[in-house]
Amino acid sequence: MTEAKKARHVGRWLLSLALLLMSLWGGVYAKQHQWLDRGWFNLLFWWESLPQGIAGVWLNDYQVLLDAVELPDVHGLSDVQYDPERQALWALVDHPAELLLVSLQGQVLARTRLLGLEDAEALTLVAPGRLVVADERVQRLLDVQLENLQARLTVDSLPNLTLGVARNGNKGFEGLAWDSSTEQLWVAKERDPKQLFTVKGFPYSGQENLVVDDDAERNRRLFMRDISGLHFDGASGHLLVLSDESQLLLEVDRAGRPKSSLSLRRGAAGLKAAVPQAEGVSMDEAGNLYLVSEPNLLYVFARRKAPAG
Image 1 (cartoon, rainbow, N blue to C red):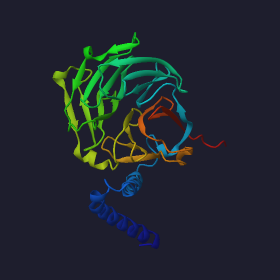
Image 2: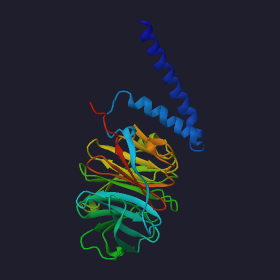
Image 3: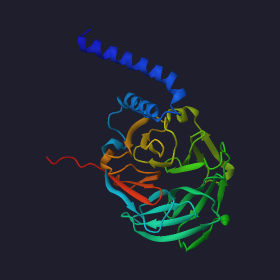
Image 4: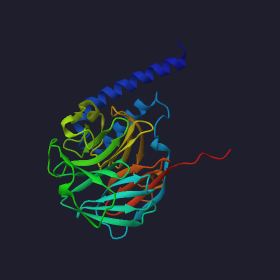
């Protein structure tokens, strides 16, 4: 065996030992110590991503394009969704519940009050002109048609689905994402415990065919302190999972294995200051990322351009 092969063999043995020790020790303390939480993330990401190369979204290659643009007369942004048909963004405000149409540069184009919605926290586009919106505390999903929206919309008459998944006050649904290839919703529960699960049968197929699937192993792989937003990338089949408390956007596969990450701390990706409270994320067909933060901030990230020549 050559010296190089011996070194690689020893290195992998030491890394395996480190992973074992951290799994035993880190599981106890990671929830209480954010530095350990992030350290485990970095080690697990490095280990898992070695064989995969650069397949997927590859968040490490992103740079901020629009940094902390303030949306005028808005307070309490909770999610964002890119709309390819309108070439604009749908943004959600929690209190009072409001649906905004916003330009890609951050101008508010239209507003609709959502009457009867207690705590608007997440939305996702499931078809042209059709959103699913989540009411966090009561864990209710609403089917919203976007055609002919007026200044006010009463949601009580809309098709809806209520799920009781480990209810814990306002630690409810914080993220929604639509997978068009399987026609299922990805739903994120914020914390205590944080969960990623899928819902098939809403808003399509009828609730008599409803299937809710929760993967405990996938949830255990998500070593982030909370989940505050979701996006599903159809091109790679990967999820983008946003964490406010960990100040991180993480790319994972369907099994929850990390593939790439984007730090939201000051200086990362060109950010002048840390994102104060990341609440939602979306992506357009060109791969640009749109991220919103409390109270009223919009961020746009784009892939770095390859050097000429």
